[in-house]
Image (cartoon, rainbow, N blue to C red):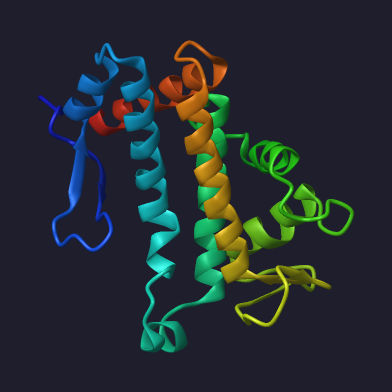
Length: 207
């Protein structure tokens, strides 16, 4: 079966009513592009939009009714945790994060210290935020989530989900910029391509 038409990313740019769709075929054509600068920029933009549209953008809808009745801090943090693990797997070149989830969070916070590590370590975040929300549907260890715009990103044992997502979007942008500026044969690109091969293989799996 030919999977070249399988969509790897589908997103809307600016106010366009027509979605941009990136298929396996389009991605492979980018890989064959001879203009290295164009290739790096195009693929870096693609991975930003693939991840941003799935994990961050759903909570950026600027509508008062949405913000009060639908937007939820726990859902935001669940998506953020999924994005952290996904983003780190691209950085590391891991085909998957089986038996590596906690390691992914440790490496992420070592590179991108959103919090003061003396206040909230990667281990604490992984145990009480990531595992609590994804496995129990709640935080544990006395940790709480809020979306109060007047509150800081981290106060006592409370995380501001909206501000955390904003910070994570900055980290995703930083990864895009790193790809744009790095040599095509650099480690960051080698790891990215390794991960993308695994992504495409998953799309093509018959099982």
